[in-house]
Length: 505
Ligand code: NAD
Image (cartoon, rainbow, N blue to C red; front, side, top):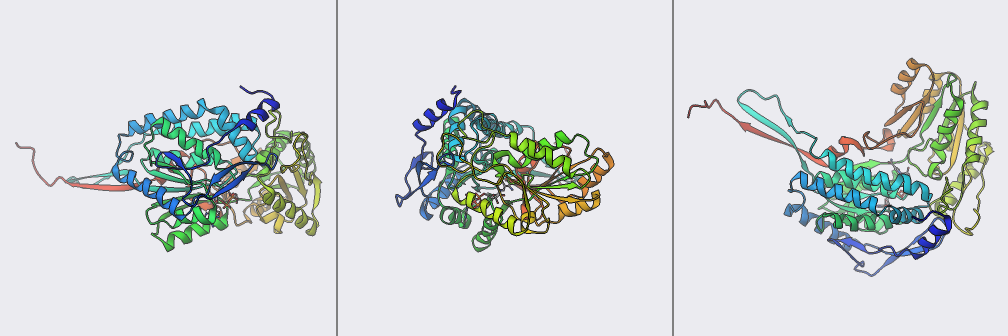
C-alpha cells in the first residue's frame, strides 16, 4: 500500500488507464477515431486521451444493451445468479481499492484519503447492498374477489441510459448502475467528460465478475454529442440523470422528441443549514456546517451552501465555523494528509471566482478565505480557500444561485419561523438541516422544510439505506434505498381467473 505523498505521485505517473469505449464486453475506439483529453484537477496536466463516442457509437452501445436485454442473458436469469455476480463485483471493487482510488483522486481531484475511505468503499457497498436485497424483496398479491388471484410483480424496464456528473463519479455511478443491473436491466453509462476513467475500469471489473457482454456499456464523450444521442435514442427505456438543472431539462426535451422514455433527474441545490438560537453545542454545529460545505471543495450537490443563523448566536457560530475552515488541510489530493482537494477544472474555478465579484457587487463581506491558492509542489491545478461570505441577502444572487465551490453564504434571521421561511425561499429543495435543542421545534421545522432530505442536529450523514433526491427544481426520482430498485422496474399485474371451479377431481 502506498503511504506517502511521493508513493502516490509515483504511482499516479505510472498509471495507464483504459481509455476506449466499453461496448459489448470490450474496449474499442470511437468510429470517428476522435478522442478528448481528460485533465487532472490536481495539476492541470492531461492524464489521458479518452475515446469520444459519437452518435453511431452510442447507437452501437444501445443496440448491444437492447440485444442482450431481449436475449434474457441477464434480464431473465435467476435473481440469485445476479446476486452472486454483483456481490463478486463488489468484492472486485475492494480488491482493486488502491487502483480505483488513485484513478478517482487524479481524475476528480478528491483527496486520496477520501477516495480510499469513502468513494471506493461506498461504491462497493452499493453493489453489495442491491445484490443482497435481491432475495429479500417480495412482490405483492392484490386483494381480489375470491374468484381471482392477482399478482403484482416487478420486471426489468429494458435499457437504462445513465448520465452522470464529475463530482462523485464512482459513488453516483454506483447509485444508478447497481440497482439498474440488480433489477435485470441492461445499462449504457455516459460518464462526465471530466471523469471517465473509473467508470471504464468499473465496466471491466463487471465483466470479470460475470456480467454478460453488452449488459453494461460505457460511452465516454461530450455531453451535447454522446449524452444527447443517448437521451434521444428510441431503444432507451429510461434515462437516469444527475447533473445541472439546465442539462436535466434537455433530457426531458430529448425524451419528448423521441420515444417518450422515462426520465429521472437529480439536479442542483442551495441547501440551507438553519441554526436556531437554542442550538446547544455550537462547536459540533460549527464543525458540521464547515464540513457540510467545504468537503470535496464544495462540489457537492447537497452541500450546505447557505447558513441561516439566528442573529442571537451568529457571532459565536461564525467565529467557530471560520476556525474549522482554516484548520482544514487544503492541498495536493495525492498527499494523504490533504482534507480539501482541487476544483474540477479551470472553467469551474473561473465560475466560482466570478461569484466573488458578484458578492463584492452585492456589498457582501468576505469573512474568511476568498483567494485562489497553489499548494506546495503543484504549480498548476485549481485550488480555492474555504470561504465564508457573511451578511448575505438571501434573496440576492449569492443567496440563491448554486456556486458549487467552497463558499458558505451566511444570512441571519430572528426566530424559527423566519429561519424556515428563508430556508424555503429558493427554487431548490435537495437537502436542509435544522439545529435546535427543542424537540418540538425540531419536528415542526423538519416538516416545514421543503427538501428531499432534512437533517436534525447533524448534516450529510447518509447511507445507501435511505433515498436521495430533490423537491422542486432539484429534480425528481430517487437514488439509493429499495425505492431505487423500484425506479428501475416496471410493475406487472397478472390477473388469474379462478372461476368457481370446485376441486372435485
Ligand atoms: P452537467 O449537467 O454539465 O453534466 C452532467 C452530465 O450531462 C455529464 O455527463 C455531461 O457530459 C452531460 N451533458 C452535458 N451537456 C449535455 C447535453 N447538452 N446533452 C446531454 N448530456 C449533456 O453537470 P456537471 O457540471 O457535470 O455537474 C455539476 C452539476 O450537477 C451541479 O449543478 C450539481 O448540483 C449537480 N449535481 C446534482 C446531484 C444530485 O444528486 N442532485 C449530484 C451531483 C451533482
